[in-house]
Length: 196
Image (cartoon, rainbow, N blue to C red; front, side, top):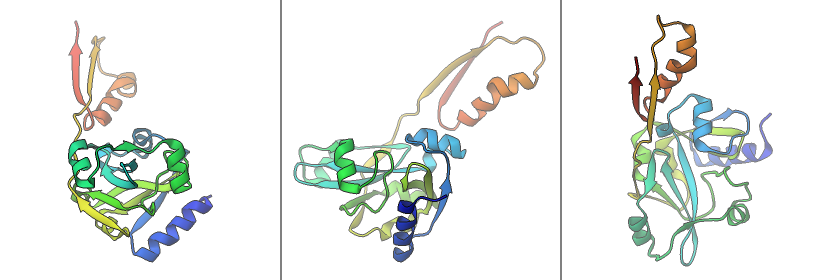
């Protein structure tokens, strides 16, 4: 059953004309875990970061396969200090638990340009148990938002693993390691050692 906060947020999105679809799942706090559960790549998601500057709080929305260009962002915001809001600050500002960010924070919002490179992206709904699929172009309808260039691609993590061939390929090989490696090949630089 969809939580009341999600239903309330759905009404706000509809009023703004932002195309979305709710995807329910078990409560998940970490972006990577949620995307894995949904069977999607990290590049298909975005996060709403509530940030603290010298004088105010702002929201920055960036794709999950990118990281903030810190100095560029500080210069754009005209601040010397920039940090993620603490869980308590986040809860006080949004009325939501940490990890359940929603795109409509009520704060000045900066949308990284790379969000618009994909037609659809997954993002927060205000609940740890629902992820929304948004039409990326509609994110520009967020009130008090500006499209900026504040993120860059993250270096891909590396997996180093090895196998010792033990005969013919069988179902155990597939379920045990091969299936997972195929899923991870788009998110990691993978190196596999074969020992004899």
